[in-house]
Length: 309
Figure 1 (tube, rainbow, N blue to C red):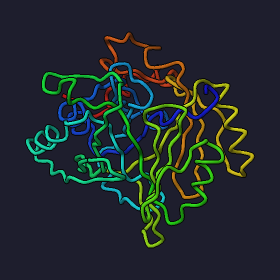
Figure 2 (tube, rainbow, N blue to C red):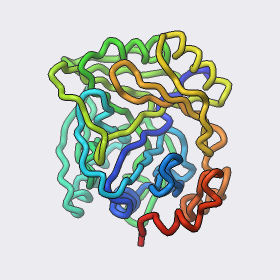
Figure 3 (spheres, rainbow, N blue to C red):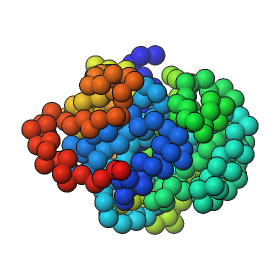
Figure 4 (cartoon, helix red, strand yellow):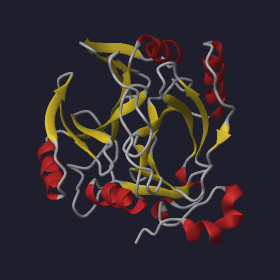
């Protein structure tokens, strides 16, 4: 099992305003700010990691809040919907809570699973999906107790003009299997792990191409145990005729990036070393952590980063 793709590792999206993004996810949705750092390539921009108490892979939603970037457009070639697992019976709580913050949510159902759909302040499309078999530990707040708290990812949905080339990556390289199909929606899953293990595909050749900016997903990261397995998958991707980066040290995991044939940017990321490598569990997310190459510029970086309070 250990040399397989272990479902989703994290998903990274784009926001337009750092403080608004931070407040919505920690105060409204009640997830933990696991890490407060900066974009490796643009250290004047925050990189927020939100998740459960430990920042377990499969619970981590990250953001690049580029101030004033403007609204993007969801469409073909992007991961367009993020599905969170929530406890069975909690959808009413979430619908009421979102209404309290003037966020409208629509009830629905996909493949027999009850859900609510809504957008974050930047227009990112989120879905809360009831699960009766998800035993992951949750992060709780004064307002959001264990019986309602977000468990982590349930699925991610890719929107594509043509599904087949992407399906080959999921099945032939990543080891996913087709579970269900209804019309233009396909569901793939891996049995290597029980949670955060679903990828849905919506195929529609009339979809306009998406444009990355606020309210859209930047990339989807798939999980592997360690760097040895990571490099095995690099060879598999290369053997399939796709371009892939060298191994990149992201401080909290090691990564490879490649763009799958449908246009979605995929990452493969390791469990090691994890988020406690530079601060203890009880202090995760409380101080600004900088990549080693930027530490010497800390004062300048802190001066240009947006104020969060």
